[in-house]
Image 1 (tube, rainbow, N blue to C red):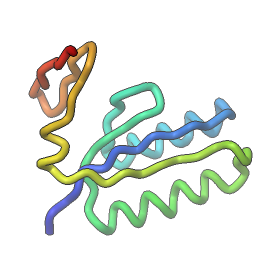
Image 2: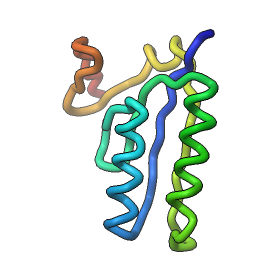
Image 3: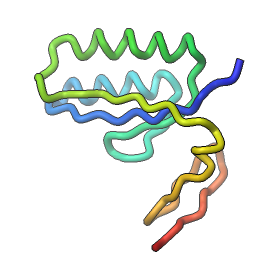
Length: 99
């Protein structure tokens, strides 16, 4: 079974809930790429499980809070452009592309 890479971004106003969301994503093996952004690969079951856990956490959320999960194929992910500081993934440093 082929895993997909997922980018997860969130906009949460409550500090406590934001920390819980962050810890939940880390528990699924996702890596932080921005303050409110994570990425990593998930199986189909892992994705469904993550969605269930996030929905439970988001139950008492503010109407403006959101979590977005974006699937990205491996070849698309390899073609990403990073502007600014390079970041390290699985001990491989990706090149910085500056326009």
